[in-house]
Image 1 (cartoon, rainbow, N blue to C red):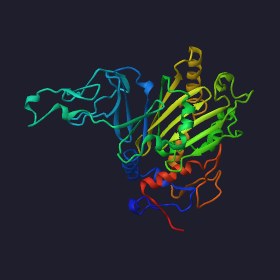
Image 2: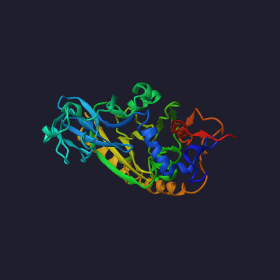
Image 3: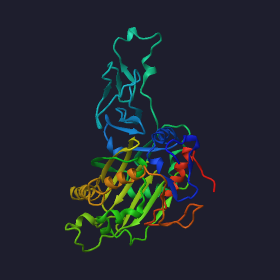
Image 4: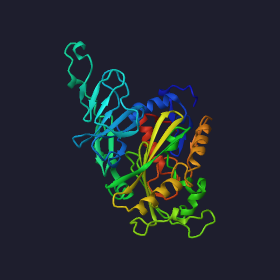
Length: 395
């Protein structure tokens, strides 16, 4: 397929284990994804309620290209708005988080309260005929909360959240452990790669790319992968056990479980389509939010959590593992930025990316997966292909 093939003429490879490389690098594909996926019939996690625990707390996020504003209102309700003034469309808030009672647009000084209502605007007596402040409240997005996670959708066609999450709900609850979390902090990292590369979550590569991951004996684990065949969500119920002695590390507390951890010896990862991961590895609890700024520009916000009832020693252990082991520059993850960029660069060449580990058929998707197969994400890719409207090539 040529880079100049019109969108309507593009075809997906016939073999179920192949992806067209050009879908990672084409600007027109990226623009279509904004419409079909990010503004389409999908739920997007944007925060945990503990990120906005107090009245007046806010957090800003971007889904696709749309800036969003999450506010814990002074009436104790959490709402999500488009982060744009209803006057001339100016982005209302630029800070990543904070606490405010009122939100003022810097351009023409329109003032909104924490419930999104327009409370003041200068020179109102000279506005257009019939102007009413109540007609210019911030636009509220459709929102639901599941196990403390705030989800939004920009489409009225999106099914109810409980139905949408399907088979991954149990693993999601196990990963977080409780709704009663507290925020430890954030990491942010930028990758010079397409968002679909950074969020692919092929588990085969773990101990092959990340030498430190070998400490957790991932390839020797007997965990299972469950995939929601309708929505493309992936749930990994993995086995990880730190090797008792290794010359790779001096501080073995970085690869240990707390004694009272109900998941000791196991990990949980939920990759929610299209681009959020909820992860429990060892004592680290995190949510990764992937933000595609451009076809080769992806920013990942990683939020780290502790349980509300953790003592300071346990919270400190979670911070050390989250940052030093699993963060963007941690021992397990430090290679990701380089390899993501190399995948993106390589995708500028003709042909297809071809999955191998766990493939038993070219004409149907697998339904059962081992812990270290790479084929589970093909179910996500099939949902992507279908939602984008691309047909498979005939034999």
